[in-house]
Amino acid sequence: MGIRRAIFSIILSTFLFGFRASTNPSTNPLTLRGEVRLNPHTAAAYINGLTILAKINKQIVEKTATDSNGRFSLTLKDYQGERLDIFCCGIGIDTLLLYSASRLDKTTQDLAILIPIEPKRNMFGKPYCPICHKTDKVYPVVYGLGQLVELKVKNGDSTYTNIVHHKFYRGTCMDMSARYYCARDRVSF
Ligand SMILES: [Zn+2]
Image (cartoon, rainbow, N blue to C red; front, side):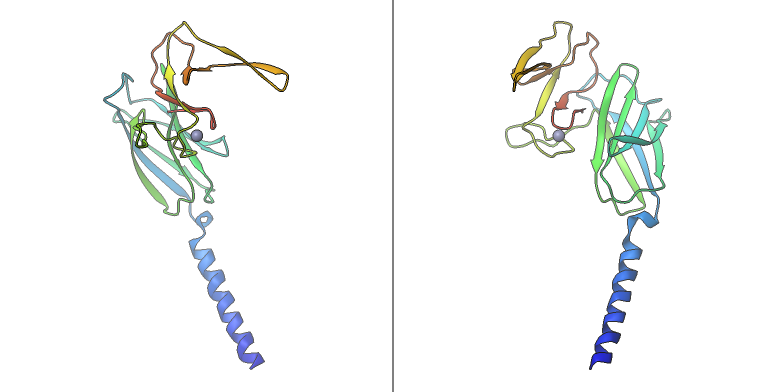
């Protein structure tokens, strides 16, 4: 009985180990193939020559540029299932969050992305942040030189905030492309 149990546990652990090894995403590099298009709701000017950044743990791990058709390809050799954030930036374009996902297990992901993205919204029309999937810290971005700042005093420390009356004041006269800002994750989209 003891031997049978021992054999069974060896078989079971071999099976589990083999299963884990074969599904571990770190065994395969992750390739992202993307195509960006302009969101018809905004005035962002172009799709070619945009810098595309891949970040893991807020660190840039890979970067590339879009071609004249707005296509790009990125390969992450050491992807192990962490949260992956894709940003773009360019002349007159904010650093925009385009995509955020965790535990991607396919070796190739095809992404069709609008710049800026069209976020999912709750029943009141408030947009969800693509990272925290919440609406409570997401503010519309306001452009213009007449920037409002508000003095906040918390625990004796005073700081200025760009978020006033539930709007994020970007502080530039250029009308750029971000429409929303999540104060929790400090990303524009
Ligand atoms: Zn967020």
